[in-house]
Length: 321
Image (cartoon, rainbow, N blue to C red; front, side, top):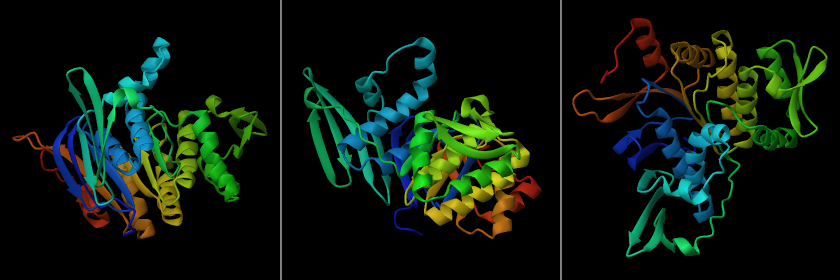
């Protein structure tokens, strides 16, 4: 197991988690479970933990997890985002892993508001009036929500492919997905695919193409880092899932990327397991998230390729359901 990979995690006071622990994570981790059990929140907590490397990056990730949830509402309502408000939404978060111990809380006494940031063993206290609200990116840590990436993010990530002269690899993957797609390029600052001899903007193609481009470009951008994919099969026809998983497993190994992905789809889980077995990949694992009926506590149960194959073929029931 690579040193920078998350192996175990503890989450306290974040969204649906009061005091949650899980371990046994691999290079590629697929997370399933019922709606509202906390799959996305779990990934967001891990995202915070690895992203929080300094104050600016900590502020950035706190802002990002709220902005991502509100992005559609902001667009529809035509509102401007409030950086301070978004950062303060995650008050009291605590996430500990083998990589980092990160926490954030707000103290408001007698009209004086202070932010407390915890980064490993260092605690930094800042008066809100002195906080710059400057945010910094960490390109090797990528998060794709269920809508895929914006054009600007795809273009930025595509530069990682260009630097490796790997354009042909992306073109091959897209052609396997849709035989009419011949090539991908950035033209006039817009991502476009050559289809049936002419270039079309990515927005004119299906959601599946955008999601696939988002995933592949993000894997290259996240070399030696992390990729989080929410609802990873969104817009992808079930018949194409094996090819998608094959590319994720192979590229994540080649580029040394730890991947966390969520799904609601049994077809996606079955595809994941087929590709695991076909590639004899022992660095990938499936986790089922559930709530204990009696205690209402959230837990995760990991299944390796053989265990998952047995569960799928015998229609086993998961604990807590």
